[in-house]
Length: 224
Image (cartoon, rainbow, N blue to C red; front, top):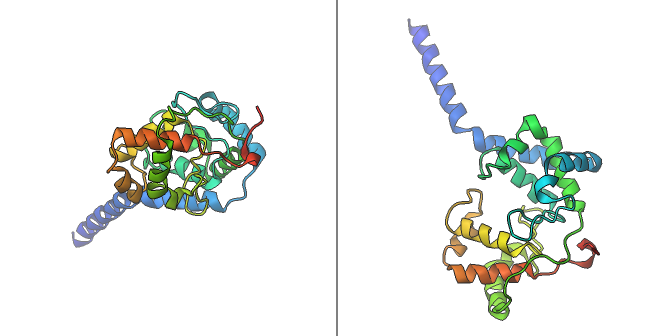
């Protein structure tokens, strides 16, 4: 009887461990694995065209209306993190979740391959911007609020998984800024969320407009 009760307690304890650890541990493992693998660009292109191009476009430019972001030229580390976050349930994206499931996309190698291919795509030279009527004020706000992590020109940081945001579509930027401020994007950096929480809609529009106008270096831009 004692042995039976002990087995039940051990089983219950193991189930608690499994329930408490999963998402973070699984995410960390997948991130680490995908970042350490040597990517296959050709495989990444095939997977991208099969799974991603319908929404993000063959060139990775997304949509000027902001429904889909420009992915082209993004840091490989950022794409890896976002895919892993969506797959682990750390970022809500109902449309993408079925696509990034391992049964559809594949394991860490597939994530590494897709991310590497996206990072090679040349960016849209003419992203959609806003009204452009508060740019001097927006520059001051950007340097105060965003530049420490995303860089003076929105170049991001590969090692810290901070996205390149220069040349991103205005409407997409604005929606993400609002979601981060309002707590709707679960995987947002807490420090960034705390800063943005102090800003109203007019400030966020001004920031999104300024960021959309930050020009990537010439070698990252398409001549189309």
